[in-house]
Image (cartoon, rainbow, N blue to C red; front, side, top):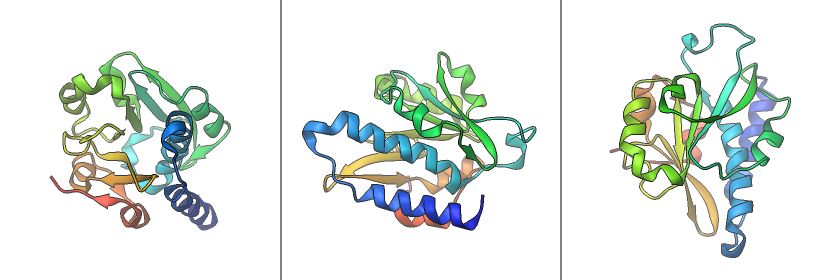
Length: 180
């Protein structure tokens, strides 16, 4: 990806961090913003070279549990690429499919299953993202959270390291770092 595209993606992420979110419009607007974040996160994380067997392989953004995004996520990623790979949205039925994901959004409907999900994802090069309270403290890697009527990011650098992933300096700069 060119420096221009990286700069544009960083500007977009930073802009999204300051968009206000009204309490009565939370669901649709909040998840539209989070969908843009999910897409752009792929440009701010380095995956091990072994993740993609060939250049044609898709970059998979997966959703586990009830899908809060609807069609918005598909519209955002339509005909786009991340690190030169076409983007695909996958809705998972089982935990065994996690290994096929580069990003995994864990829906709030899966809160009771978090320990099992984190155990299944541990050590795999999969960015595990969620938005439920204490997601990071319970074992997640990146968490969306509201503050001052804005969507913010929380990131656990150790969890990234354990998965063999490397967050960019720009991602580290805009996220609140949490160390367990």
